[in-house]
Length: 136
Image (tube, rainbow, N blue to C red; front, side, top):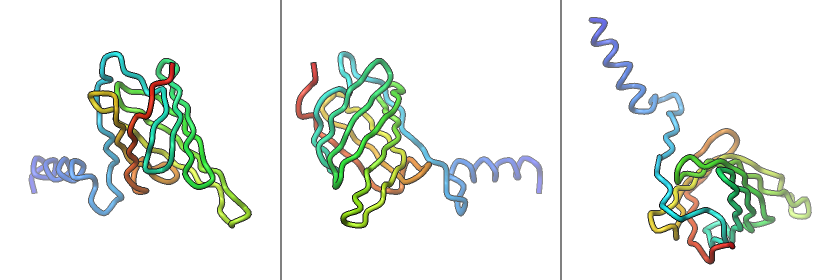
């Protein structure tokens, strides 16, 4: 097999996400719409979220089950974050954590992303939210 054929196979393997090796996580890219920020109250499929943006940093809380926190950094209109969901020993639930990302919609009214456990940005599910009100 020629070295060019071997190179083409390696490129295809990487491009397809390393089939059989867990794949490569692809986080979308997107520009932040003008005049929009993440700060505010959001209604999500994992409970209400209160987010506060300070420059490129975003911190927040969500109300799913025993509640939790998230903290991340903006890259354009994409927020990459770490999340922690508090445990509740009264019902035998331990603390869990992971990573995730949100992509801001072009009108600034919706977030769409994914979340995962541990060091993964996906694999846990889809996380979406609709803006309830802007925080000023």
